[in-house]
Amino acid sequence: MEQLSVSELCGYINAVLTSDPVVSDVWVYGELSNCKRHSSGHWYLTLKEADARIDAVIWRSTALRLSYLPQDGMAILGHGKVELYNGRLQLYLDFITPAGEGLLQAQYERLKAQLEAEGLTERKRPLPLFPQRIGIVTSPTGAALQDMLNVLRRRFPLAEVIIAPALVQGEDAAPSIVEALYELFDFEPDVIIVARGGGSIEDLWAFNEEIVARAVFASPVPVVTGVGHETDTTIVDFVADLRAPTPSAAAELVTPDLATLRDELINQVGLLHGLFQGLLQLLRSELNQQQQQLLRHDPQVRLQQGHEHVAVQQQRLERAMQRMLEMARLKVQVAERSLVALNPERTLARGYAVVLHAGRALTNISQVAAGDSISIQLHQGQIQATIDELRD
Image 1 (tube, rainbow, N blue to C red):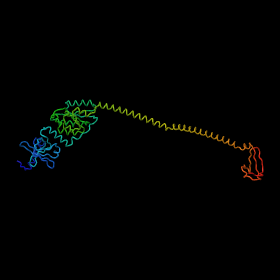
Image 2: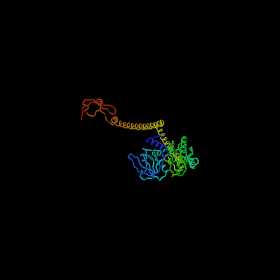
Image 3: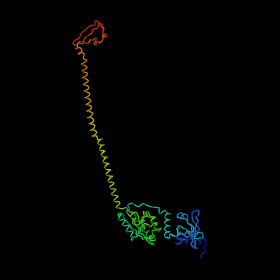
């Protein structure tokens, strides 16, 4: 018989406890007592029932996720593991819920809180607008598959559909769904639908398993869930990129409606036709303006305009010259009349004479003196004379 020290015995017992699948992953009912919150944020308490009790701890990280604080006398259903600490058994709780909710609901809430804490429920990727390949994980014999195929054929028959058959109910359903998902990943679909028809919480429980939730999160493409009816919500619905109320609704969400696309295309074609006609009219107007500008800047046109301008200016010059000639003729005529009127011969013909001295016409007696010789010009002939006397 082997002898052990107290520490060796405690270590051995603790190793046995941590390797035991029951106490290392256990759900337990009990009543809380001696609830104390440490300054570190950890909770220390006792979980008891009749004459049995066990010390328990809720770490600060778990306590922060609780929707209520532990209180003495509260009956709970808790999840955790049992270990030996300083020679005493201690229950480390990672989830508690009021005892009246039932084990399945408690497991559901615990896993949901855990996945939320890890951030697995936050990722929501957009769905492809026109998926070329759609993957479906569901039962190959269920009515849900036929409903989805009918919707896909009606709405978007252009897409290729790949079916990964899986069990969707029973103990082997969760690993079957995971295996179907990973097989589907190899086909590189654009989007995946995980679905099954309605049922009780027990029937749908495979979709509340952690391994299924993590497989959905591991998908390289968006995942849409359509599990059960509209009122059913499973863990995979939180991890998926989009939740549909039913399998048929999931098929609608991942596909565009071909009829709607056709109508939209017709509308767009009409809109483009109108825009094209408007643009064509605008281009015609601009072309007409450019042609007008070209005509205005055409050398032939400008040369013709220059010829017309020269002709107009020539006509103006000719009219101006004619007016100048007319005015010159009038001036000549006036000058002629003046010359005729001022012609001294006409004056002489009327009996007048011009007295000249030294070749100059005399107008005043001061211009000559007595004894000067003068010439008297008559209309016909000239008289030479000598001045005898001057009189004023």
